Amino acid sequence: MEVAKAAQTLAARVADSASPMIFLNIGEPDFTAAPAVQQAASTAIAQGQTQYTNALGLPALRTAIAHWYASRFGVSVAAERIVVTAGASAALQLACLALVNPGDEVLMPAPSYPCNRHFVSSADGVARLIPTTAAQRYQLSSEQVLTHWGPQTRGVLLASPSNPTGTSIAPDELERIHRVVQDKGGFTIVDEIYLGLSYDEAFGRSALALGEDVISINSFSKYFNMTGWRLGWVVLPPAMVPVVERLAQNLFICPSTIAQHAALACFAPESLALYEQRRAEFKARRDFFIPALRDLGFGVPVMPDGAFYAWADCSALFAKLGVDNSWDFAYALMDKAHLAITPGRDFGSSDTARYVRFSTANSMAQLQEAVARLRRLLA
Image (cartoon, rainbow, N blue to C red; front, side, top):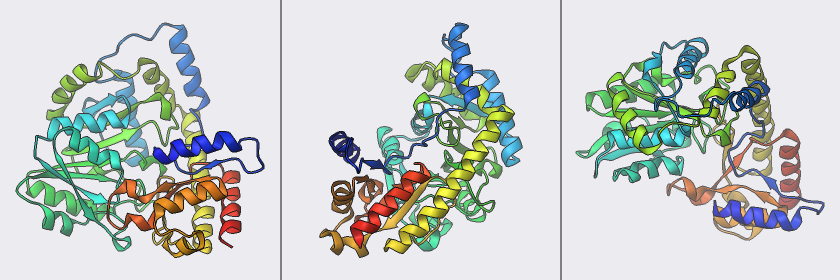
């Protein structure tokens, strides 16, 4: 966020120049909500459908989400297990508050999305980051979970596909991880907010296929392009639903009613067809941008199989910009190329001073211009 603020300040100064700021730092799709979704929101407002809903969400929306799991992922999920939330952030907060007691330890990979560990901390738990490597797709292994499970460990918090790496956990490895967690009597939370943006059938499977005791977090922000609408959901074991319901009643009352009515239109055939077209566009951007980064000297050892990120080792390029870490590298790109990216240190302390995260959620034209600027700067 500090980099983003600095980039916005500089962007205002160079807005009318020949080289306006290009933002590849925030993981926000450049697409907006589908036309049917926008119309549904307008209709809800016009018809006065703006009062509180049940804390668990509109029954029709919970049912629609359940049907989507069946049609898209071949997984049967009871609508009663689905709790609609004020974004995936609220879903993660509710899950952590329901499961984590003071001093409890939760295992998660490094690098990983910083807010996930902060949700654990907000429940007075301890997020234990375990370093991962490119060879393991920057994801935890079952062997690591078993090795690092201690007396205070209560569960794991995973993300597949992951932010910042865009990589997923292989289904057989995820099954082994969950088996270890089950044997320890712990919980498995899987952040699947980018699952709809999987590009590889080998990885595009929901962890919910492993059984009712898996907790899955999802969102309308990424695949459904509704970032500012602040709407997500969590799929829970049946026994947890009333617990989370009580927490949601106290903390949030309910998710946005207008956003919920609008989200029903996400599952209309024309909307789903549009989202698939956009997913293909995100894949095309990845297929252009990752090879281009490699050609420029960035190290991207694992091709992202989902989401819209590139986790890139920029250390081979430090000397060209007169820096020795990725934080200064990011600021140098901002200053010299008017290109905003995210330094690696947000995502943990495991070798992150060498890495930056690029977001490929921007248009192909913007990505092409970014590559051209990088090529000129690094020549």
